Length: 268
Image (cartoon, rainbow, N blue to C red; front, top):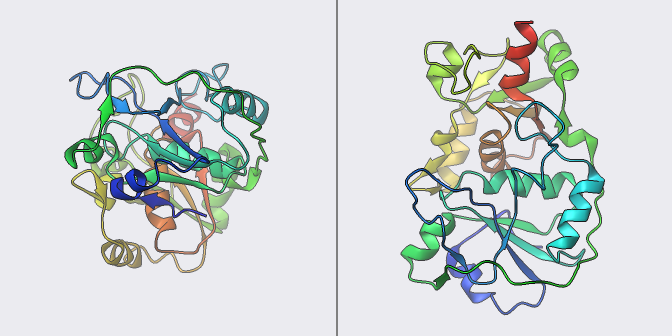
């Protein structure tokens, strides 16, 4: 079983592993940085279309187990695959993909620490062509509903306080003094939640060392309660969730609708 995060050097040294699958979760950036660059052999994991519930008006919501399985098989992913996922922003979208595989029952998955920028910085080979055609895989989804929370759970937890809700948005958005990026959506936070901006667990595009993360999570007073991670739309929540996975053993889940769903429901 591979660790939750792996280094670029680890990945380079394991490129010949027949069970290794490299997934590129990058999305095009306005600056154009690395938009047409990928690690050789990487297969594009399309979060915008193939791996989200496009019938849901909320952004980035989990697809069905059937949809996830079907599209993983198209990517040639097997039950035996060792998956390493990266993106072109260092650490941004890749933890979301890691969490999706965990939620769908596949444990042998890791995030490339530092992503494509770190791979290129170390001088490892990158290419511009698209991924190769692959044989269909035999991946099977085994959805674990405990790893996703919905609006009703979050509402009841305000009074029950059985779980600690941790919000990965910036302090300004959490406190309601900075605007939300989605037009018409107010800023603020869910009652009882605490704030841990996702940038607090990162340094130079990589996760901070474990000793720094231990210190950071010790300040949150989470005790042994289960943790629910939230953000704007379910992406950066997974960054701080993965950081917590490195240093604490609490049960973890994601509020998939996140602030977008909560704020829309509260203003109806």
